[in-house]
Every structure is written in structure tokens, then in C-alpha cells.
Length: 358
Ligand code: ATP
Ligand code: MG
Image (cartoon, rainbow, N blue to C red; front, side):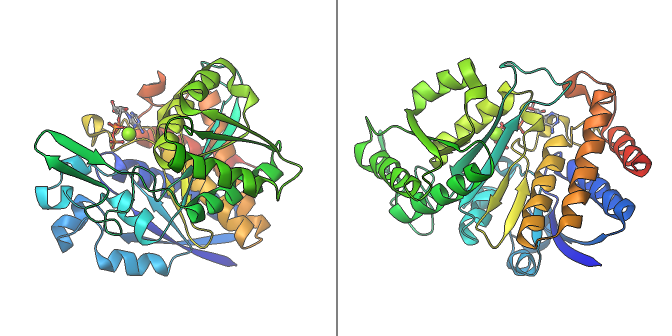
């Protein structure tokens, strides 16, 4: 039986609750399918790691992650960390930069039974994950941002051909499996060199995919187009900061940010990570919605299934995803979606559906 070793980073706030729910659901799906086994390896991240190892992402965690097929990451509450840790990279930034996880892939798809502001939509945002206005603080130490006097801050962005090329290839490859349309989002009319290089490079890469239709929009116009006609977009490729903002917008437009999934990948490794944060306001109350984390993990399983050409793993992902959808359609959901189920009741209901599946 195919066995996958999955690194589990529970994180802060609601992280442990939603990650544990996700692991329980995925484990139940694997057990029910009887074709796949998961070896979940719990690794310290965030407050737990600061207390045990003095670092939010200690070396033991990084070394252990290298031995895993994929990782599930919970959210972190880095603004609450002691000052010495707040000044460094936050856990997501640390992992994205350390492992060069250059592509942040964030789908936004309307779900039956979930109210959408924009009618039906099914799009995927490819966000460049390593540079732009969030460059690697170690690589560009002192260059990213600094004060030239107490009243003036200078912030630099880093835009490289290499980074644009690889995110563009990832986006065009995905477009070939979907509706064959790529929208490049930038602001090359104002930041001519940086966004100009990004736009030109994406267009150049696009020539290698002649079946794919290419268009481009400025970020401001794109925000408006997304609200007005989300259904027209298929694959969107954009820079780090624009992708950050646009994917939260897209997530909320099709339902709720609490449902929005993502994976971070560099082709060899992939990390599931819900789009939302650690929600400290509701932590420890057993009311958090685990769907964003679960759908991210379903994306991770699909990514692994494709990489290992494992049809059975793909079926395990469908089992978990369908059980979740049916459960929500039956009206069982957490308080953020207007339901009354606790995190554990919702999780149990999904596991029940998995066990009743044919
Ligand atoms: P971060 O900077 O870590 O991304 P944020 O300021 O974007 O944090 P979130 O932690 O995402 O904030 O929370 C925003 C709001 O959404 C909060 O009121 C929180 O309780 C709610 N929220 C976020 N995730 C969930 C979830 N999974 N289930 C229920 N409510 C959530
Ligand atoms: Mg946030």
C-alpha cells in the first residue's frame, strides 16, 4: 500500500483545532478507501516551537520536513511573538523562502449551498511567493526597507526574470488543464521596470503555450473586473503583494475567506495552508471552521497524486472533499457560515459521511 509521510505544523490560535480536524478527516478517508496510508509527523511551529526550541521554525522542524512527502501548515499568530522573533521572518515567510516555495496557488470556486456575491465562478490565482514587495529579508538584508531619516521610509521591491518565468510556467501549465485562459495582473503603467519585467516575461512564456489565450490588466482595474465578472476568469498570474490582496478578495467573493484554500509549492515540495489567519479571537472555543485547512490539504493530496501518478490517492482526496460538501449541503456547518455545529461536531459529521460512502 502506498504510504505518504505528511509533516503536520499545528501553529497558533485556531491552528491546532483546524489542523487536528483536517488530519482526522484525511485519516478517515484513507482508512475507508483502504488503498493509501498516511504517516502524520507532528512538528513544532509557532508558540509551541518558541517554548520548546526558542524559534518559531526550529532547525529540527526544517530537517524533518525534508523527509516528508508533503506538509500541512496551520496559521500562526506572529504578531504575538516576543519582539526578537517578530523582527525576523514570520513562519510562513521563513518556510516559503527557506524552501523556495515559489508558487502560491489559490483557487476560488463557488460551492453549492454557499452564498456567492458574484454568481458562479471557478478561477485559480498563481501568486509569485518569494519576491516583489515582500522580498527575502535574508537575501536582501537592509535593502528591502529602511529609514533614511526618522520621517522617511524607503521600501524596495525585487522583480527577477527567473521568478516571473517559473510562476508563469506553473500558471500556463495549469491553464492547459483548465479553460486555457491566463490573465496577467500587474501595474506596469506606474512601476514600469519591475511590473514591466513581470508582464513581458509572462507574455514571453505564454508564447510556449499557443493554445492558451492571454490577456492582462492593471491591478486596480482587475479588482473591479473580478467583482463585476468573476466567472470570466480562469487562471490569474500575478506578483506577491497583488496576489496576496486579490486572493483574499476572490475568496470572499465566492463565499467566505474561511473556506479559501491554498498550497505553496516549488515542484518538489508542497505545503497546504488555509488562506485565513490564526483567528485568536475565537481560539480554543471549538467553533473554528476547518474547511479552508481541509481543502488546502485536499489540494496537497491532488498535487501528490499527480506527482506520484497515484490514482488511489486522488480518490482519497475526492472521498474527503465530497463528504465535506454533502455535510455542508445538509446544513451542518460552523457559526461563521450561520450554522450551529462545533468544530468537532462538524468534523465528526464529515467522518460519518466518509464511512457511509460506497
Ligand atoms: P493574519 O494576519 O494572521 O492573516 P488576519 O488579521 O487576516 O490575520 P484572521 O486570523 O484571518 O485575521 O481572522 C479574521 C476574522 O475571521 C476573525 O474575526 C476570525 O475570527 C475570523 N476567522 C478566520 N478564520 C476563521 C475560521 N477558520 N473559522 C471561523 N472564523 C475565522
Ligand atoms: Mg490575513
